[in-house]
Length: 97
Image 1 (cartoon, rainbow, N blue to C red):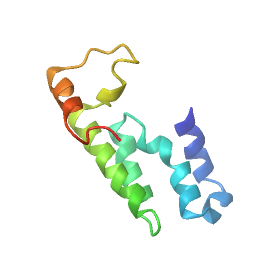
Image 2: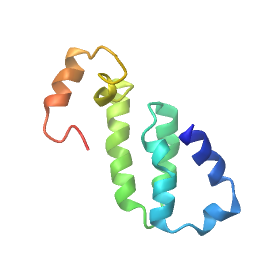
Image 3: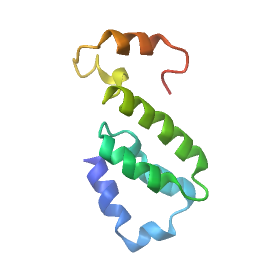
């Protein structure tokens, strides 16, 4: 739902007047999606002046989605079974944000 609201908000004139931090916040649902297609879009949306830190985080999130197709951090709460590779990943330093 948050992603749809963010997508719709980006179509408004008000979106053009947001500060970088406001825009970064508006784009968070893109970053937290488990869709590879949404992350392809997100890279372009975050690639703007003032959003460099957000872009770095988006790239890190996208790398996880590209690797696993989902966020392994969510597996327990969503009652998904983690693969061995996901379990190993979750023990690595810096694997969570």
